Length: 254
Ligand code: NAD
Image (cartoon, rainbow, N blue to C red):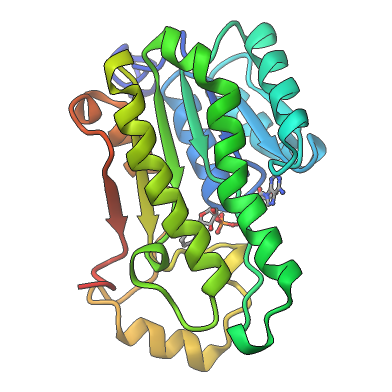
């Protein structure tokens, strides 16, 4: 039997996972990893079309993965979408709140809109999905994973909005972990450091070189390394972990 088809490596067989921001980068890597484990993945991004490639890659590993489009900040639309996913895919066992945006700038000049939008997508978006998916997740004794960031722990000049949203996610994670522990639902956060994706592609060469010097492991991270951490938390290794934030940053914050 190939490793991809053994029961042990496909331990999410029969489970339904919802991943937001699945069209590219970290979300896509997570969706593909969960499909590799046998889960049916609902791949969510701003439009379903954006997720077409992710879904094709997921369906090459398992069956029944579907693309959905929604703006995660729209509460009513998220509620409707979670109802549809539950119906179409037959339940909901795993929620990964990964969708996120940046609108960087120093506080002195940051437009109110840039603060509101980043909070609405990164923090309210996770709140929207967590609430809309809560009943099926409780029924399944499922898992929630929120993709935060190291800057939610350390703060970062020029990212007051983003850091606040990511720190908020850590507070949301700890609170939900306490609310849902009695229902057998584990809720954790992952705080990636600098990961090579579209989000970080715009960094100037000088700034990137400077950043590299501050990473003890001497390199930036890969989206697959965040997906591997999600995989760990969803597997037996995560059975007794809740309310925690796992920092995956090559030692950046040491
Ligand atoms: P990315 O920009 O490559 O992908 C972001 C994803 O979120 C896309 O699929 C996009 O469609 C989706 N998205 C954005 N706004 C949305 C909205 N309103 N509604 C629905 N979907 C929306 O980013 P990435 O680097 O893959 O980051 C993924 C997550 O990891 C984000 O939450 C980000 O803050 C976090 N993170 C990234 C890094 C990094 O270095 N790349 C570090 C720490 C944390």
